[in-house]
Amino acid sequence: MQLYSFFNSSTSYRVRIALALKGLPYDYLGVNIRTGQHREPEYVDGINPSASVPALVDGSFTLGQSFAIIDYLDARHPEPRLVPQDPVQRARVLELATLIGCDIHPVNNLRVLRYLQDVLQVTPAQKDAWYRHWIDEGMAGVERLLALHGHGKWCFGDAPTLADVTLVPQVANALRMGCDLGRYERVLAVYAHASAHPCFAQAAPKRQPDYTA
Amino acid sequence: MQLYSFFNSSTSYRVRIALALKGLPYDYLGVNIRTGQHREPEYVDGINPSASVPALVDGSFTLGQSFAIIDYLDARHPEPRLVPQDPVQRARVLELATLIGCDIHPVNNLRVLRYLQDVLQVTPAQKDAWYRHWIDEGMAGVERLLALHGHGKWCFGDAPTLADVTLVPQVANALRMGCDLGRYERVLAVYAHASAHPCFAQAAPKRQPDYTA
Image (cartoon, rainbow over all chains, first blue to last red; front, top):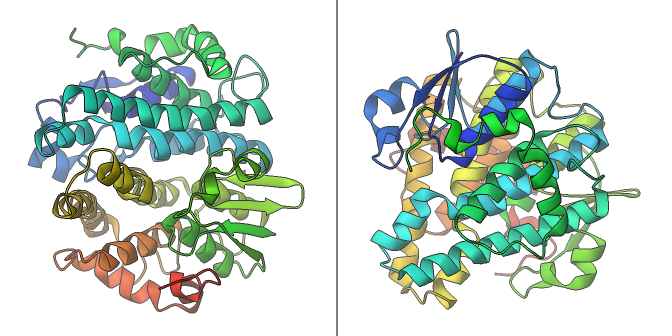
């Protein structure tokens, strides 16, 4: 398989964790979204019509969108399963993962922050406040879900799921941006446990071939 | 079952379509997100920790996040299945649905538009341009996916899937906001076909008990 990825992209990071947990080897193909490589016609027309990272190539099959990719990997390589099969466990995992993936991540990604800066010409302080606002709104929800349904070291149950796979990149991103997450104790506890796991660690931005400081 | 919903919420609209397609009766409980009912402690602590609509109550089980809810309905009431079981068909459906659900919808929802207006104090013209910008970015991707993998009247195959369930509310929202979608021919063709289906029609905002002009 080949993975089109950018080291600092949270959605790419999710898929890298999933591939590592499943022990699947792949070729890493860097796509620099800072310089707009994800918008170049050969990438959009040939690899990923979503004009984003990540994209997975599995033989003649090419797929974009991180949640679709991880679901596909679960279907093709079910060990270990990242989205449980039991309807209730599955629902809890998808609820937390999509809270992060729909309510937090999209509003704070690079293209949105750039629009704020370049088109709306907000100040750096306004951009930081925007970022922190959506992190706080979303992480408060994640903390509430963990308080109601969480189990301990991992978000749910005694093994990593899509919930952890989605939580770790988002928390890493928030910490890198200087957010104070101190009030989200359960979130930080899961992050500390999960990010130290070898498969999560090897998927981290700094360990990728296209990493730059 | 009970559904906490707001008539004009695209994510609620998705779940209403899914419930209608599966022929499942439910009690409609309106949550006015314009007046902030989704943030009231009794709702956040008792119903939906995500502090959003929709939320589904099925006996003693309560669940937020539209994609998690539809996946749960598919597990409990698989006829008709909205996310196919075949890995490749499933991947295509999830790719398109999450392109809309992650790349388009969150950036243009009510809370974000209100932040732009109330906190960043953008002009109405700037807010409209923001909305159109993300619609165009995302719909161009949806159109490319349909050109590559689409089948005709429905997004994929000869029956509605989660892709159509996600596309219709987003297109309806864009049209209501006055976006010109003329260049997205395949998107508009699916929308015309799907939105005329009785189950999609009965889920439309104007048909809900909490509708106001």
